[in-house]
Image (cartoon, rainbow, N blue to C red; front, side, top):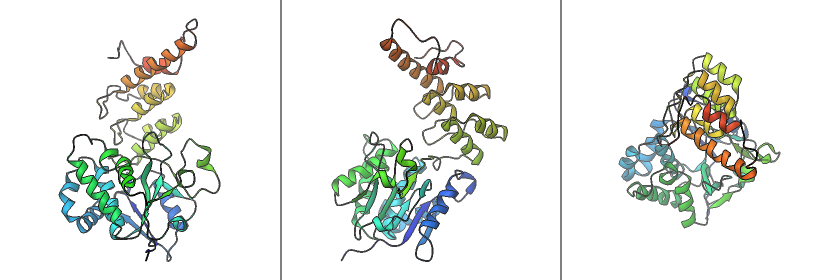
Length: 326
């Protein structure tokens, strides 16, 4: 007999709500509306609750869980314990519900959302549903533990994230895949705002670090190219050194995007141009890399008309002061 998916919506977030991204409350409310009580039960897990789930579901792996260097790795691992014990639907805090998805989950099966960013992964762990006690989650926990001891697996994507999930799905092809076009459209695609989609993922990427709300507002505004909101956030006291899970500051992101206006604004506000991310790369390095790439493209297009100014050139020169890329 195939067991139905329990009518439970699970989410995880810090107990300290000052660390919540400004969009999370709206997204959280969307799930309460799409899957209302009393028909559905809503469960919000904090760090202590996640650890208790792992201790209950996989006590033999608790030491491994505690040993993960990155907070997001523990959060990822605990999702398997959550669905193994309770079943139901797990969904990230930055996913908005536009309709109730439970009618799309076949009884007795694990359902996982497809990724629209196939250059990174085939599936995402941002939306997953399951009956309780499904062996898929045991397999996922065991594979995560196996990878923890092997040097070729170093990134969060490989250790506990979507690439781990891809591997377990490949070994368990009976998993039901929720199509990205309906459940997880790319933010850059027309489908993101289309009628008839069930959910959409805003990819805020802020649960894994120590930003307060002002820092989050600055970070999101810089990534969106919103100059006015960046100025407002800094005037209100936002930390220009706010970092995401990869160690990237708002200035890093502006440099990576080639947003010369944002780079110049952040530099004028005294953002640290020498700040290093987890790959020991500074905003200046990213700007210089982009400049080399775009200058090369221009030369191929027209050697007779080299570009004298432009997005990448401005990014590389905004505060170079004689800087030379290595």
